[in-house]
Image (cartoon, rainbow, N blue to C red; front, top):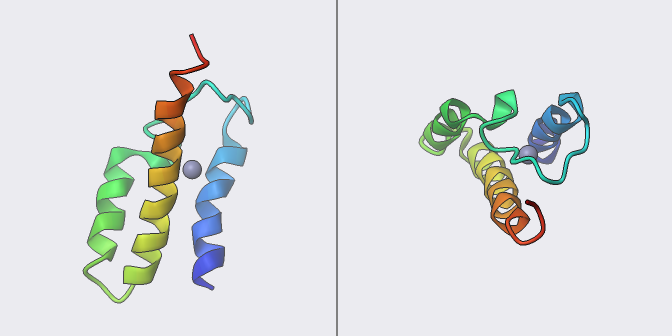
Length: 75
Ligand SMILES: [Zn+2]
């Protein structure tokens, strides 16, 4: 269940146009990846939805790491 919910943020990637752009930073671009939503995910850590918050933040973290890695091969 929790796993499925965290997969929902991946749909955010699919909704983006263009669908795949390795040189684009997901953070701050997708609706569910905005800093505003990240603040909401942090708040989830203090609720019963804590596991969900952790899952979502882990996703944001991996996306952010991707952004940093992009600097090595994107102009
Ligand atoms: Zn993402």
